[in-house]
Image 1 (tube, helix red, strand yellow):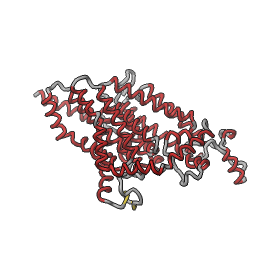
Image 2: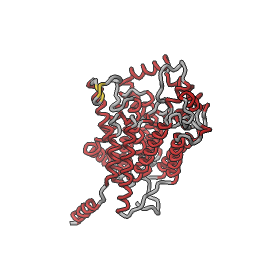
Image 3: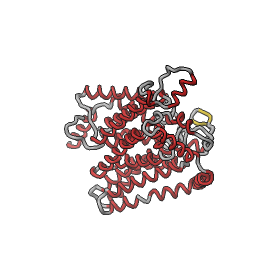
Length: 474
């Protein structure tokens, strides 16, 4: 009788639970579908995403107002980080406005007016003003997306569903990439493939960008597995009961997470991205060690510390599956060098010419043409080092402000992981930041909107899962 009443009450609560609303499903669609059009590399996709994010935010605000609830603010460091990022975005707009600071514009504008015989032509701080305005708008879209992720992830059921949708999407894209790889298809989505047929890159054009993306998916699946292990170890049961519960759960409801982690990591290995693998293993090591050290002393911590050896096991698996190819790529690097390293010196020269103002957000390709010499036979569209590229485009002050924003988020997440019982999502964000930060030293994965949206979602999940501060309505 009592159990029937409890079940009826639970069913009533489920029926009375508020619907997720349009904002949730628009957000979920962006998170899941953004990798499909080549990682959303072309400018048309972030422009479309800006419209979708705006609609989602309006829908969210109207929904909260209809329910008589306020808008939650995150921790003060997160608000400060957002303010710094917004300042950088406003600087990007400032660089792109023609005629705003005629005395500070690049000398190339004076040469352009002379060559075109158009003295009335207004210059700008940016070499390519329209590009600076476009990229600044994309950055603004990403910032609003991050806040929307935080708001939606305040509700536990929303957060859990989004995490599972994210992992399911990651697994699906990995399966597609593996099928193309093992079947030897000579097509890329619905296009004829011309490069990279012997490696896994799923729907991305560049295998290094895909390695970053799928690395985030692998870390997410592993973080949820670690959360389950911690919850299982904390149960007041004996060892046999916990082992039996673990086997039952894995064989019934837990196996999708294990399969997802294995499939995503296999896709990462077969992408043959050197720095992608190194960055992932660094993030994984931090995730496992941070999780282990925050466990209570005893057998549970012993288990966690034993898991720290997992990166070595995965590295051995990489050598077994694709060791020859990976070793050949490292050998090629040391024997023949790499154009990106030659470009770094030229980028530094360009930075020294305009260290404070930069050449304009999104203007790297045009700016690099001004300093390129015979050591670089090709035109570089990207700098293959996001940090140098940012300094070159934005100048040192704006770049330091943007890096400070990420440092604030990273420090806040570390504090959260040490103070909370639910520590896995905070550690996941820390590990994800280490992964993307390391890979950004030699590649440009964080210029792919699909990767940025995935990373910002993990940030929203981490900070959205923090305990509610008093005085804020949900």
